[in-house]
Length: 422
Image: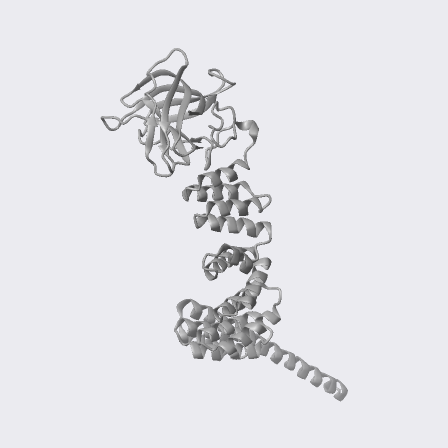
């Protein structure tokens, strides 16, 4: 072989060997890192400190292995050692805001207030627009008694992530000792979303008037959120305020929207199966009952409600009900029209009025006839108690002397109304 060719081949062989060794080294390092992270995941799930240490040994320059070992140590109550591991992870990845955040929270657990604040400050500095670092620092500052700075951070976090708004309001309420004005100042209730969240919170506290005031300032509200607020107010017996909110989502074309009136007493509007407020609520839990509007038979308007009984029916369950606002210590009369066909049962249908707050039965109508060839107008009176703000009008069955107590036949209902008697 010619010497000049040999001299050219030797450097090339060396270069190829270097590349091959470099590839082997890269593969070995990658395999070590991959295996160490696999061990780390196993350690995090099983709280196996030995596996976490092995992961660190395999890849000591990987900050993730130190973070996982810190997490395992934290779970095993080794807080000082966990802090050391987090500090090692940060030395390898100093611009990771989440590592600084974890270190700040861990130092707080160790009662190292000054060290915790340094770490939390650094986390916020590295991620100034993220909600979580601000939220955690705000909570820390509140615990240190620095309310102004703490709430500033919490408000910033809630503005970035609205999921924090309910908790911000709850914290504001707790630290204000239930003083609504102070709570509003802490949380700074200024946006539509915050007004709605505050209304929901106040409803849970049983403060109906205040909840309604906040709702009125909340702008456009979805039907789901409105219904949920109505449900909470009804649960708190804040019936007047619940009605104010419920009525904002109803069209006047669907029925009388007056406070002391039966809504859609002639069943002219669409029936809602999930009614939570002051419209008709129909029971749909039995295959033995069918309810539908009927335009072929009616006492007034263009429709009536047809109830078909096919056998199975629980006498204790209302077939139809509506909540109605009333005045305390007043006398009222309920009127409605009914038509029946071939009713066969030991427990006939009748209308019942109960106090929405106390659930006390106030009055009931006479039972419906088993058969009527024409519409029968039925009226009955009741007195409200001194604390009665709303009543429930329902159609259900008389108690039976036997069980089960099936029912067959058809009932048409129409022209429900209520009037105050002087």
